[in-house]
Length: 171
Image (cartoon, rainbow, N blue to C red; front, side):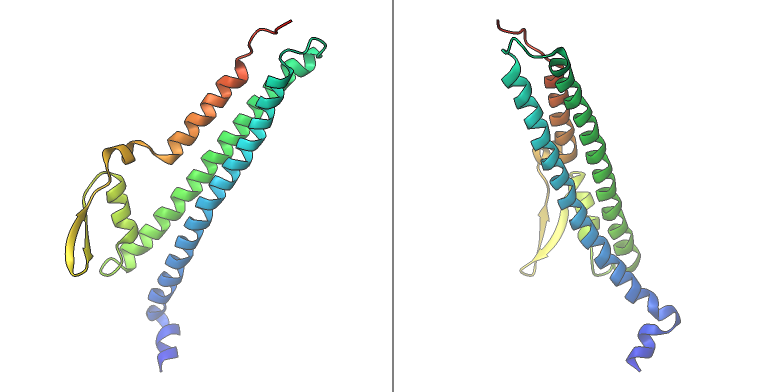
């Protein structure tokens, strides 16, 4: 009898919604890790390019192709890095909104994790019941100011500027 309830008609939707919600949360978690893995790999690659530029600044016999080429390679790397990071954060946002949509549509009476997270991120107080007491919790203004996505873009912008800056050669 229980199997009929899970597989029959309209009763199937809550089970599908639960699986979809679990998958959205799992993909959200996966995408978050993937964004930072790609970011770290590109940071290492950019650091190598910057180190090569720095190590070769005082060499007299370097070819023009290398002294001009390395900053160009670095800039192209920064552009690719920006695009990967932007796409990763867009996917990350999609999974958050998908989980929130399913939560609000199917579990609003019992599960508020993602919905409350949005309110928290926007600076609103959220109510949590812990140890039988209702507690207000609010993210500080400083935490709301330091969004990981925008900080990562600032790092990219700084590295772009570093690639363009070329101190005079010491002879």
